[in-house]
Image (cartoon, rainbow, N blue to C red; front, side):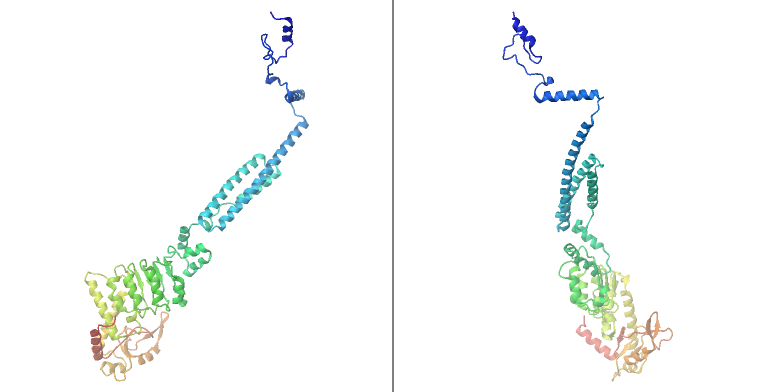
Length: 480
């Protein structure tokens, strides 16, 4: 049985202690329950909270003005600290953004520019997150509104824009290729923009046409050398136009053709008076893709060579112009003209061998008709017909060329006159179609004209002298 003293001890024990009747002194002390909160500061806080709760219940559950002021003060301090940290971070991000844009602007390599651009995009994403947090705080705060305004300014200034530095080399070359500049000099001037443009301008991808006809008056070998240079910028051109460049020689023209002979399709050398057989040979034997060739007015290029080599050049050639070449320009000797007649006759026989046709474009057909008409006029002269219209020409036709001045035959009407009398006859010129023409006084119905000064006319010999000269020419094989 338990003693009365033990029963009284159990009755006086605290509620938080577990003291079973058979507990030993060591196990009779137990830890208070957490809900009881009867130790240290916890007891003070619980008591204070109980008092606060009691006061709130007494006041109907509302905070006092002091509590509200205290809570608002704490919130303001926290917001201020957050805004200070956000402002500092925003400044760092904006500085990094400006640095990356500057690095992208100064970078010469495309890879470096792309790396800086990607870094700038990452910074813009982070600034977007900062803006989202600021809006969560509230735009009523003056500091928040100021920072939002600045972020809007930064985003507007950082708007992605495509600049020349963002274009890769291939795209830049294609853009330059599509520029329709009136003159290649204007396109070459773009090489002064920067090093990238200088390298792109000298790329074969850019140039498919070289037209220098606008600068014919000032185009010399030296100027053309400065344009072509020693690189391959013009190695893929398909059109070459040097019309009117009367100061160019074989050296400069061959330098251009030597670069592009495998791609060239159109060549216009009209009016290049200093070009010779060397240029014509190179074109005939190396420019196999050629479709159009204009040699009008190239008075040193033999017409005979062109007709002799037409069977080779006509593989792809569709348009050929040869008026004004050596045997069709100025005063042509009768014997030299006979070489042209022979060359055309051989060309016609070559066409007839496979039922070929003359060019649909160009003036080859007209030249062949002109030569045929002139040959008929010469046969009339050699046969003794009355085609001489001055005393000097009559003496020459009768094989009496003693002190007789040079006599020429007019291709249009076939009359023969010495150069002195024809100079006097040209005083009766008239204006027709915006140009001066020189009517032949012996061709009234219909009116036919003498050649203009410097125009095509054939210098004739006496019939006997012509036979001797022609026999000697054919014995020696004749000029090329």
